[in-house]
Length: 340
Figure (cartoon, rainbow, N blue to C red):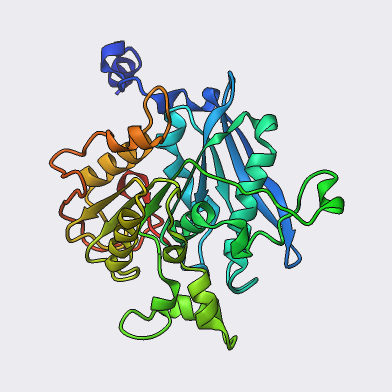
């Protein structure tokens, strides 16, 4: 027995696990957890900040929204989804927001918009590059990524966001905030579609509550409403057998983006459910979504978006793969999160 232990301890470097970024991540990424970015409904709303160490100048920055149908979930459940981006030198901001049990719609959308503003306002402090902000999320978080990236001030959901400095007291105006791209993992694009009819889902009904104008509000909260020329590029990953968020939401979004001339890609997982993708497909999608349009220069510019590398076996528009059996786990293989 002692001989066996000694052999293990004396194993040559060739027998050790291959070198990888994850072995050194703790010394290369600074973490500031639970930073309060606003207070609403009597609650301190918090986010976690991950920054390359040492920073060495402004970094492209990922803003992440967790899923859970706007009524469940936590930012802590999505931490591993940050890894492909952190490995590529991004800063990352993992956002918590008000769930339905604290405040009904449109609270989560307001929080998402305010989180983006917080990132822009704190760019110098954390070495965020405000011109290279990418928003992402899955399920309801995909919806929040889309609303955070596509909405403008005129939509009316930025009004509760504080403005730094004297302008808060001297002017009613709010500057527009823009993101470089959206990576949407099976997110809702038509909230009203989930309130009644064949695609109705109770999580959406619960989030909108009993207000008499819930359908009108749902339409105002739908990313489809805000597709327009000049909108940021959008990448979506969606399974065509998703039981929780209809695949048609992704199809309709990307058809609208095409009509508006917005650079976009839809990667379809044939037979894929609500994030339950095969390990190989999930690994490729996570890494390629982080790489999508990246390059050494011109992060998510229109030109780099068009020349992004294809997934193995994919077309210019779609990527297909078999899916794993449906599971209920905090994280799907290869850091593709489930909403619950």
